[in-house]
Length: 186
Image 1 (cartoon, rainbow, N blue to C red):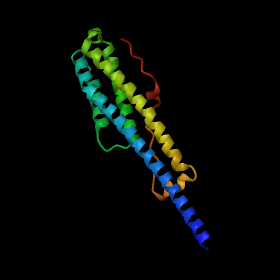
Image 2: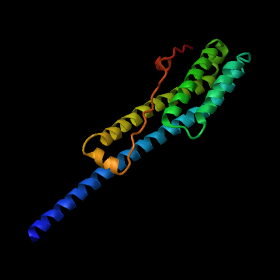
Image 3: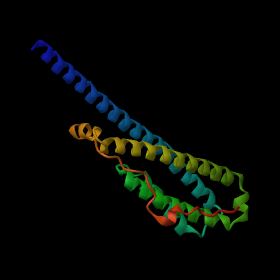
Image 4: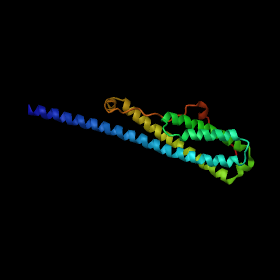
């Protein structure tokens, strides 16, 4: 009887350690997804900080393009609004990307502006920021995929369900037009 009790206790301990291991793995993945999102958020904030400077630089050359400036400003304000889900943030960023594309198109019509060193520097910083955002999106989405897979596959789905782990949202571009690379020539 004692050997049977020891075996049962050993199985309970092994099962408990297995559950703890799965739980800790899920927590680790969830935290990695959250960290990846915060890194994207840092780059998005940098992007949002660059935009007013870019708008002001272009404004000095293209005073009659008021509608474009207002559209960029409106899209930026929506993108920096707090409390958005990942999907809402992605949609707002898509609208901002489209508005920026129109702003760059306006800038192309002004040769003096294209030669302006301040404009060139802002354009380069914005390009670098866009590259970091793209890399951050890839890193974030890879971590989301790993977390979501762990939540869905057996047997970790049982532990995930017991401890209320939820699937994370991908940071995706929904608008097919936004998937097109804008053509910008200087």
